Image 1 (cartoon, helix red, strand yellow):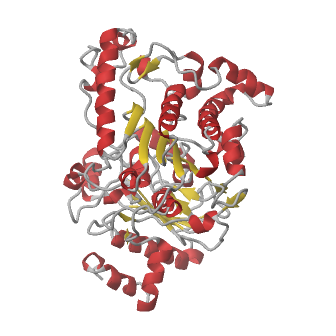
Image 2: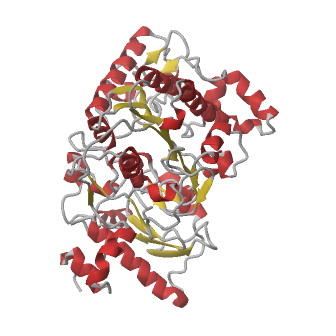
Image 3: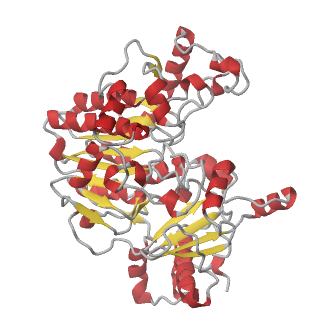
Length: 531
């Protein structure tokens, strides 16, 4: 049967779905393309603080069982809902953030560069290529249209203009920025600070094109990998920018996207202990931000609380989030502010679709509509955040903003009825789908990849980027190279026993393949292997 030339409806019929169950299946799987016709904001709603962390693992949060001192993030979980089966669509930074701000699967990316790379009938490869189209609608633009003032601080990574001197070549004459010459550059040099400020302002202007009224303390990608002196975290700088935004806009509804660079590499403990707090991506500051407990007090406090000093970097992040929470309390805004905390992915299996990559912490607090103290094992995903915020704020984008995600407000109120029966994931040459119990992962190389394999005579990882990191994933998963992988997550959360070839599980395998097929078909004219 030629699946590629079938309509989605006929395809679903071909795999055993009657006409009466088509709509229900779309709802349960998320295979839909939502368009909302709700009117714009009808009255003053709650503020929103969306905290999107970087490479945060569950063991780096006390409320997820981590042996770390994170009292402020723990309090969010105690006063709200903590999800144990929250996921992102993709376990690398750029597409994960794309999914959050658009509510779409990253393979729907409408940026001209992405469309040029993957025209119709060409298999897509989701990686660091899913820049947000400035001409398209997104979460920030919708909030702004609904009357909110919008702000963005921290890690950007939605796609950005090329810096005035990429790789810092104008002021750092070395070829790659990692040489001794680059290490010896004085960040305090006014010329270097001026260059950094110019690039930072250029990025902030680009952020405004995507719907943010206020943009500051931005990191274009991660830190500045082209120079050791700039390759540091500055949590206080990000926290200070977030607090200034709240102070300035406390009298009106606001939406703040706060994206700390922690816990991405380089290891934040090194920055916490050794880095100059005046060094920023906007130049060298005259005075270091004084908005969190001093860095030299963190380890003593961690030890006094009974935790290992090596975990102090987790408390450094928590201090920044705590400063924002305390400011909301000071202005009597805390209970009228939706606070969402989530990670862009975990780092254990980053660059893969295994649980240690796509499964992530997620906490939501808002006492007016979130039942406190909940721990939910229902499935939800980062693409659900945008429609959930719209639902909670009683606002909507125009009918032209289509989303794959669904509102999970019912779960926040304590309803145990699932919003999703399954979730879909994509990265490089892999696709996956999971239910509460089962996970199916498919590895299907594109035609270009097959040629590359023939030319090199080597196996290819799940994508052509970040191969050293993918090698670490390979070491954790013995079935990494298998084209079809089936895991029972109830007894094999580490995904080490592949049941795809077990005769006892062929019906389950068929069901999961059918689910994946439905997702792929719902995404349009881009094939994925035989799906």
